[in-house]
Image (cartoon, rainbow, N blue to C red; front, side, top):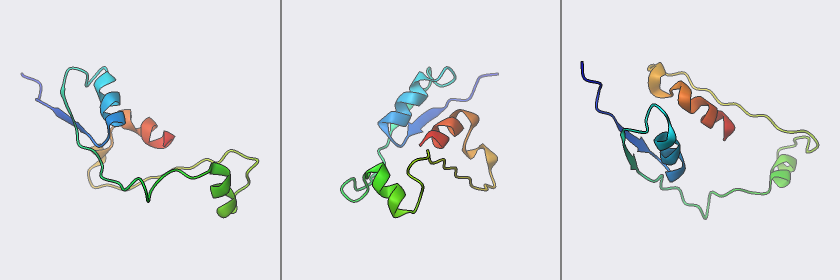
Length: 87
């Protein structure tokens, strides 16, 4: 039985490079489709400023987590969960 022919599509060069380095995906075809976010409007701000703005304790390290229910649980595979949690 022939394995499926997968084309790996990343929404950034960073995620495309990670997928290309993956043991499971390195031999697959890769394509990068950039995510068109206006980086003038959406950009990182000073971490301490943001913590103060949100009323968070700046002397402690903040921890965040996001989750989503999905009808198709295979949408986010195990290999991408650590990346999503690190962002």
